[in-house]
Length: 179
Image 1: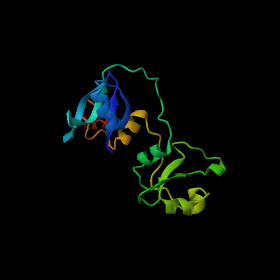
Image 2: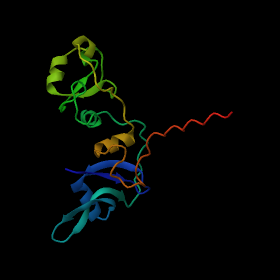
Image 3: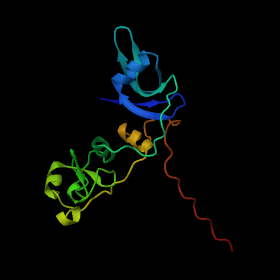
């Protein structure tokens, strides 16, 4: 099912919701469609509206500032794009780099997506103890990154340019030496 980004009335990203919930919010006049999937429409007996990709709430909702994205198993799988950190195949489980029995916790930097075979092979050991190497290093996404990852977008692709999150700045070219 498609995910839809919800913006606050001031255009700040809040969260993602299912397509069904987004359509309900638009039909109840609680939100307006800011950006739609091109060529896709939701049709029923009395409605015909574009499939929303981004909606904006009509009333401002106060949300406490969130400095960190909350950890979740689903979040780890989405962050790693459902690819095993050991072999690159489709991942269905979450593996703790430092096992919980050895003091490792449920954190962004200690968990990676893994296929069931590699998770079983690694078992209750660290990757070095199991003779396995991580092909990707775990990282902690920012709340904005977590929203884009939940939408399945990389670096804001597919979003309108006014909403795209700017990427890392490009370093300035070297100045020619003067004689």
